[in-house]
Length: 145
Ligand code: DQA
Image 1 (tube, rainbow, N blue to C red):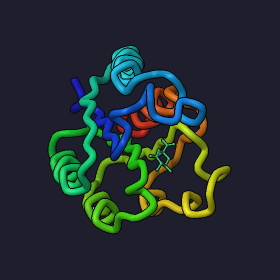
Image 2: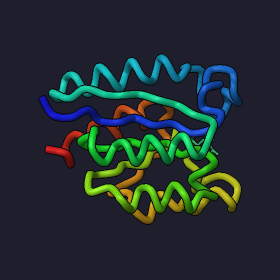
Image 3: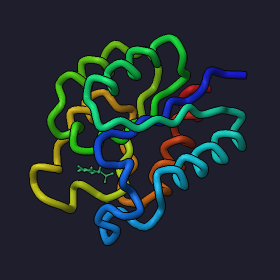
Image 4: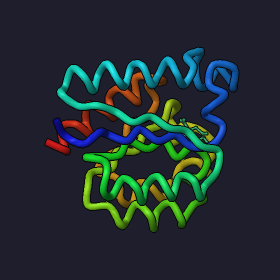
């Protein structure tokens, strides 16, 4: 059995379902994690799904992924637009990183158009709501093979 795919989510994503549903949809993060698990299972992988509002905690999990994961799916949320610390942690990985977003940040405010994570991600899936995560897990599994 390959190492799990880490599915990591950043700040405010714990409030999915009630947070700006017109942008982020009505699914909760638990709903999305269940979809990721099902998709990963169908591809012969497992997932470890975690969310934190704290930048340093996300850095710790990315560092852990160096040894314990076969790939990382990351929705950095707002930290994607601001965090050099997340970028530096991601640069230490020798496993694939797939960035994902529920919304399409490129179609929103100009400050969302750039993410530091994109500098190291193998690819970005955005704009498909919870399905962005499922597609990102599928892409990560394909890259991790
Ligand atoms: C987000 C997009 C970010 O710009 C925003 O800060 C988020 C969520 C998304 O999933 O669409 O918190 O990453």
